[in-house]
Every structure is written in C-alpha cells, then in structure tokens.
Length: 415
Image 1 (cartoon, rainbow, N blue to C red):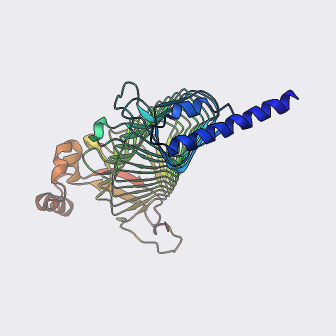
Image 2: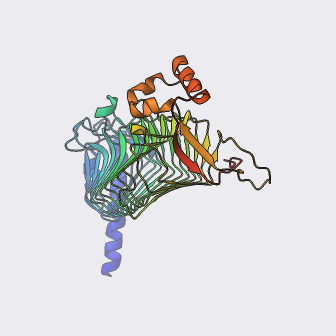
Image 3: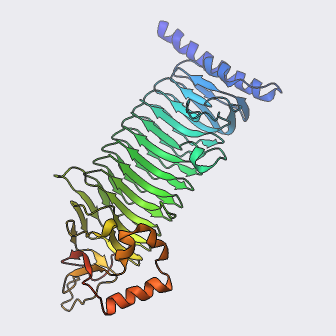
C-alpha cells in the first residue's frame, strides 16, 4: 500500500509541475524556473512549454528537464544558467543563454558537480563557458551546439572544460567561437565526433592520461590538438584543417609519451605535427601511423634534436617542408619506415609498392630558418628560392641530412 501511495504522489507531483510550467508560460509574468524545478520530485520529469524562463537554476535531485527544443532559460547575465549538484539528472532540448562573465566562478551554460548526468541536444549561446565539469565522473555531453560570448578570443570561456573528471563522454557537439576545449588532470574520457570551428585550442590536454580522441573535425582553429604532460592518449581518424598563424599547428606535443596518432588527416596547417621533448620518458615512444600530412608549412617540426618517435605508413604530400628540426639538428634518431614521400627521387622497378632505394631528406637553405626561426618569414620569397636552388646545384658545404626512410612507399594510400 505504501508503494502505491508513493507512486501516486510522484505522478501527482510531476503532473503538478507540468501544469505549473504550462500556466506560467501562458501568463505575462516572468517564469521562474527554480520554482518548477523545486516542485519536481526525484526521478520526475519537467516538460517545459515553449517560452523563456528565468534562471539561474540549481538542480539538487536526479530529474529530467526537457525543453522540447522550444524552451529557453536566460540567466540574465548572472552566474551559470544551470548548476547540477546531483547525480543522474538529464538536461535536454533547451536553449541556455545569458550567463555571467566571471572567469573566477566559471560562469557557464551548465556546471556539472556530480556523476552520471546527461546534457544533450541543447543550444548554449551567449554563455562564457559552455559545459564545465569539476570532479564529476561518467557524465555524457552529447549533441549540443555551443558558442561563447562575443568577446576577444583570449577572454572567451572554454566550450567544454573537464577538471579532475574521469570516464566522461563528449560526443557529437558542434562548437564555434569559444576559447578551448580543455581536459585538466582527467583520464579515460572519450571525445568523439565533435566539430570545432573558430576557437583557440580545439582540444587541449594538461596532465591528462589515457583519453581517447576519435573522428572529430577541427577546422580553422589556432591549434587542433595540443598535449602537455599527457601520456597514453589515443588520437584516431580525426580531421584537422587550417590551423594557421604564427602558433598554428595541427597536433602539438609537450613532454608527452605513449601517444598513438593514427589515420588522421592533418591538412593546411602552419605546422602539421609539432614535438617538444616528446616522448619525455626515455623508455617509451610515440607512434604515428597511417596519417595524411598534406599542404602544411612544415609536415613534422621537432623543437630540438630528440629521439624516440616512430613514423610508419604515413603520407607526406605537398608540404612546403616535409620535416624540420629547430636549431639546425636532424631527425635521424627517430624511426621512419614505409612512409610515402611525394618528393621521393627513386623508382619501384619490381612493382612491390616500395621504393628501390631509401628516401633521404636533406636541408639546404632551410638550415637558415631552422637555426634562426625569424628567417622563416622569407620562405618562398624569390631570394630564398634562389639561394636554395644554388645550394642544391653547387653546395659550398655538405647539406645536412634530416632523416632516412629505408623502405618508402611508392604510392600514397587512398583517403
């Protein structure tokens, strides 16, 4: 009997919340969403009628708030629009807007401070941060459209921010004009199928290990993916295009080990792959396999003469410089095997798909800008090209060998 009474109470409370939402939406008075949320019991669902509701809102019970794609919550420039201080809540079908502008309090469309929550199919606009997770595990952030406030790039908020948060899923979100998507001290997260445009770092890892990054599309950001002190990350089948400018790079590494980068397309970036003291651990390696690096200023740029990276079965196509080392060093201490080089000067007479002789890359006039990075401004200028031609025709000193691939592929793979 007690069970039936409890069930009846839950149904009545949910119906009352829905009726209240409808009545409030049809009136001319401001609609305070917090009252409706507080009237919804744990496990209940609050279906909002079309219209604009006043935030901010704090959710402390596992409830569902569903806007059906027609309800808007406006925080009026104060704090975060929705704060989830619970486990197991769901926020979907809403337009969230009008957060505050305080970076210290991380004013966001949604702040998550709990586990097993779902935020999906929402539009988050005019919010400093999009979705902020702190010490929150096993949440799902899926199919949201996120834009920051109309501010200068450096003072926008992050689209999605993870802080000490594990095993979350960031899936299929559409992100434009934010600052970064950043993963701090967080592991075992899956970042899959997202699209990011017009941001600073499409994805930035800091002290974050064992994360998976797959099938994302990062276009026209300053940096595609950057890993700082982040080990054992798997980066697969992503498309990174148009990371230009002085700091532009497709994928960057800083003291990171055990990373796998495979079957990605890195196209038209200032630097395709940038490696700084990576791998950091001397007994480990980073693996680059099956990637396309095409039309970049530099295909792979090493910050210094380092060691321990494995490059196999990649395609290097029409990069202005295929591989370079700052400071004038070489990349002979890395492993290069079975890559396709469009500047390979050799044949495949036996038709086995492999070049008859090793591919050897040399630095001629490129040594100037490798040793003095500011000189890179003059690359492709008539004078620089003339110097490079003369250096190749009749070098005064032996050119510097950059790398050797003993078994280059003769044809590129089909992407």
